[in-house]
Length: 430
Image (cartoon, rainbow, N blue to C red; front, side, top):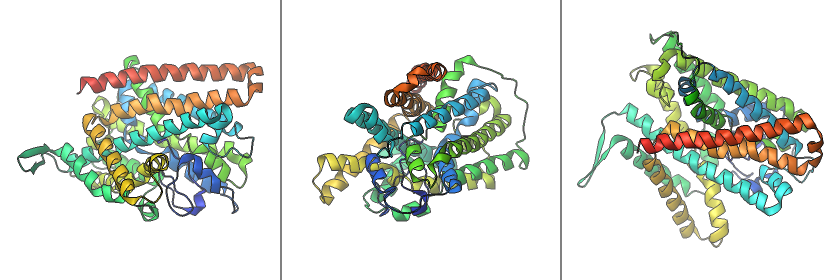
């Protein structure tokens, strides 16, 4: 995710996918979020941190895991487990980088490893990820509304705009005023957590397959090597929660339990992802689309519930996702309290996201691109590099050192091949 998600202690606010709010219910930049984490309060319990962690990991990636299995075959479920296992381990590496109590966020880890350049690199990667996730949300909204209202055409003067393009523009106009707000606490309370959305979607898909007549069918595609890079990239997107892990750890009452919490989060998320992948692929096989909702029968009640859940959830999250980027730009280039320039910056940011969404409206391929470029970097490469830099004693442990080198090599391979395949497919569909 998902993944600029360095958040404050869970007890102070509702938990939203990839949201970042300060104690006044206002968005904040990643490096600023840790300042209030331990300034008071007792910290979060193990159960609440687990809930937070699963909310972080379970996002819109659940829509594409059946498509990922359709691309790679049944044996790519093993790849799902491997990606989850490696991502869990790199999450532990981030925890080990936090021996100094001053280190509370992912950006702090970057600073500890490589000084200001490290902080800048990590912050830039997470801001880029937020931008890309916002693009994905617009594409998803366009596809979903176009499914609900097929063959819709919008006429603006002498200009005719086809359904998906028109829906993306309309959604942008609807959510634009919310991006101008400074206090987004109200939106946060209406936003549905990732785990709730995932359970609703999984339940709706299972109901359609078991009760409403779609059924489950044997699929004989065991392995497709050509589809594995795309599959691995989508799985990396699913497990991209590392930006929030240091802050979750900092917020706990008993931080020594964080490794167990992290394991529980990854096990739960893997069960959810694996269940959706298996059920979806059994239902639709090679015809699985990059969003499982696009395969569901439109007139079915469960389909409408699933689609409505997605639409409402995403509408409440656009402003929450864009605010950290806006605040970073405003802090750098705009004088304080200049409301007009602030609105202008946020409007231009929204326009740029809409332009990218309209130029590359391919949900699955864009997700794979994000997973290959940004999530591989944030979730695999940077944790390993920062750990080796901060804990130089790790070089002496031959087995762990070789494992980390193996992760780095694997991450680079996934990044290169996944980026190439996703870009190739995007260009082919232009």
